[in-house]
Length: 127
Image (tube, rainbow, N blue to C red; front, side, top):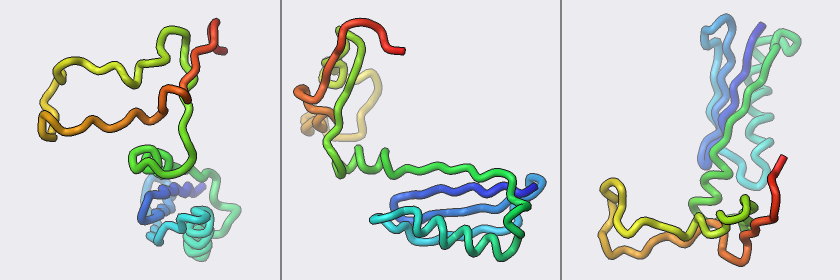
């Protein structure tokens, strides 16, 4: 049985085809931001030319698109739903950093990922 691993990054989409723990083939394509599945499909077509489809037993997927969108402040507004008493956890910061920070001491701190009005703390436990 063969395995396919897919990693959709901000710039490239990488695919690796493995059989018995050995890399058989790989593909690197430009990520298609409007629809990342296009690059995945193109890469799978390339890999499937080397190994018949029924022989593939597993496809695993990873992506950094969500993390990149949060860091770059792109995409939809973000909300935070948390346990009661932790609504402001994104705004609370120590007076001094616990470890050295690679930026000037007086540099502006980045805004929290979720603005305060977008944070809520329902009573009770989740799950």
